[in-house]
Length: 169
Image (cartoon, rainbow, N blue to C red):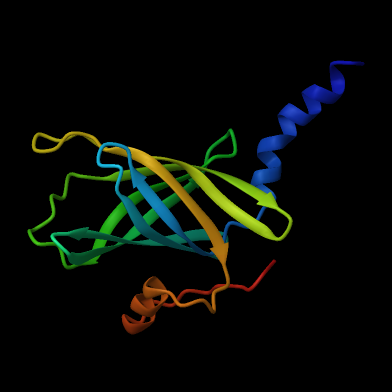
């Protein structure tokens, strides 16, 4: 009997994550382990008819010039409850050179809730290519109101991409 309760908890923990709402606007930072550079990072996640859709917006600065990239992401929930986001397509950017299509970013995030505040925290890694080493780092983002100022939501609206964000606490 003393093993029964821990066993039930271990089995149900991933199921609790599946029941939690990950949809919404998430804002925070992404920190590159090598350069120690902190990048502004936004993700918007929506769910319609059971299908999860996500987009990301990243900014970085090179020689005092601000660059951005907007990507569509593939989303899945792993068996252990982790939120897995992987680049699907680069939609827009103002990079100083043409981006390499082979470079993809994978985020593996944990969902945590403390009171009314929800966070997604975890690691990111890019794949190694013939031209680039893999990059690794951490992501720390917090769920914010969909009415917050958001460059990502502005981009999606300007490009007629319908995103249904239900306001939930």
